[in-house]
Length: 158
Image 1 (spheres, rainbow, N blue to C red):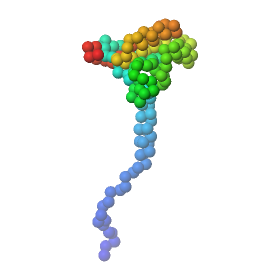
Image 2 (cartoon, helix red, strand yellow):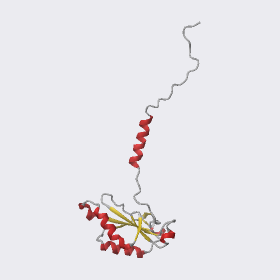
Image 3 (cartoon, helix red, strand yellow):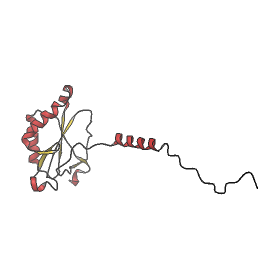
Image 4 (spheres, rainbow, N blue to C red):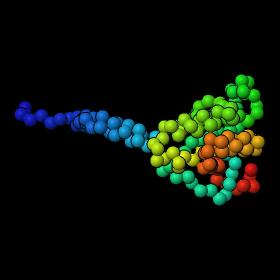
């Protein structure tokens, strides 16, 4: 008989899971930092027209968005099939644009009020009459910095 016994089965030691919570929280913080939240829920169809000479709008100044287009599926029965206006998350009439611009200015710091840019996101199938009406109301509200949002591509594909 021997004093020392040899191990016949050499099992691997168990995996150390002590650092697993650190890795999970590091991934959680990473995704929280890089995720962009959508600002508005679109209730209209918004296929932007294409243009080939596009400049990106800088985000250092405040931007307010006005959406125009046909109501999306599910809203057609209530709002019809004609082009409608969406301010923030609700359908609106053209006459409500001045109140919308004034409320957007009210939440800004005073030095940024003059730099407010209104970006029009108009569906490519929308009638130009609604764009003219929007521009008239923006003039009445003294919101003269207007940007037209478009997609990148050839204008001939419109």
